[in-house]
Figure (cartoon, rainbow, N blue to C red):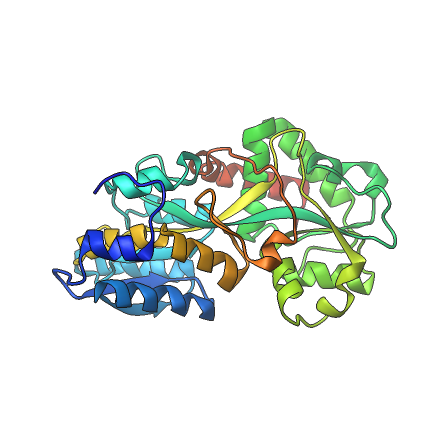
Length: 337
């Protein structure tokens, strides 16, 4: 398949044909978004390949694929966060693939070094703050540990993959010793013990439980686009900062997938991953779920575009994922619950 700079759904259908050697694809997915239905129906309409889905928790799906072994019907694993993609790779449930389309369209830092997984959408993990109480918000992750913000910061627990991957990126960008000092400083600045999801961190700003929080952009963009209880009605109260714009840039969480190690419909699986890199699919990640596309130059939905332009950290996420065990060790040592 030729290398493409832009790949439309119509061009994809022409390239791969509308009749598949096997007319089905078995998808194991931990993405729990109803809006992804559009991705599946578009692919089937373009290719004639029906998608059979099994949805569940990422760890459960990985364990299931391991237990099924060579008899696994899985063709594709889709999941959220680099750490889970790397976990699947280490568990031996993915395989390396060769696709000029994916190599061309997906940036190198959003790919596994062995081509076992590829990122297809992103969320920036940024700083939110109460505009009524904070006149000088932190401009980077490091500043979250500044004693000036003591008793002001809310964050998720150390067991959350977003927390783990952020600290893993801090390790990669600043070193393990500096990362440990940072984590200890953030703990000292907590307004409350870590709890809840990202939307709960935004609600805590609105309710006054904390003045500063970390959350992924798509939770906030969703509250701009739709009515999110406890957030949307007071959204003008919340300001945001894309961190480290004079340094490494904002940390990005990744949603991606790979071909299962024993995929019975391997060629269809590769076609599906290539479809996820098409302009239409990339635009739908933004329009349907308020995410940033992985492919450069794809237009953003209105809710996402409202957040403004920013510099993203382009550290290799395959390398970052390998730092997650060290990140968890640091969390334990500094008492980050």
